[in-house]
Length: 279
Image 1 (cartoon, rainbow, N blue to C red):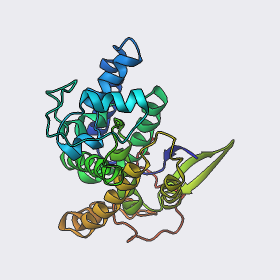
Image 2: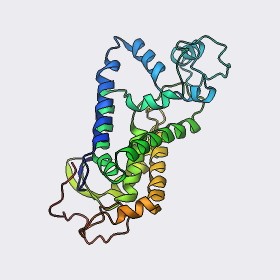
Image 3: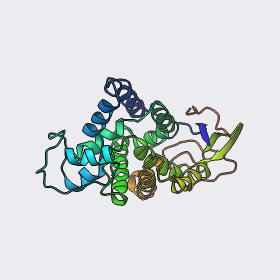
């Protein structure tokens, strides 16, 4: 299933969504494309990406660990050496890598898919949270997603890149706040309108069927989505959420206010006239 757009009006310009997309595109076509071969590409990821083993030990991968991983195929060659072994990037901060990895991508398809999902679902979350809260939510979602991946593979020495964990958090919040928002979806060769709760629910379930050798950090997707759902419920019940419930002065045909299922839904595919669609 490929989402094409949602019928979910916004009232704010999604400045931070634009900024994140621009930053990811700039990183991919900038420093990531300056590498001349696969060796330099690997070195770039080792320097800037999040790596579970490094989070576990608090130290950059040693040269021995790198050789065991990429020379001998042992992707759990993690050794707690207290920093005594020589490393390729001694100045790397393993924890800063959690942040920088959110802006790196492994391929043009990886980048394009992530940015498309971010645009479809992110602008409405930014609209509800505001720019500053959205930035904080995005970063926290990405961090939680990386931690979820680390919990299931603490000894992994494979770099993890991509914004998908943070975007999964956005999708989780979207499922809570806009469950009946229509999502125009391409299913094989057919166009169908699917409510967000079904589209996102199906997406979430499919993560558990990701192949073990696919190279996809599916647990980061799951962790990010769960973070988004939990944060969405907490924010909905907070004083901030209650203010958002009453933000619109006009009655709407379906709940676009962030009320997470509190509004009536006579027909989720009816448009509210006079409101700008988010594409």
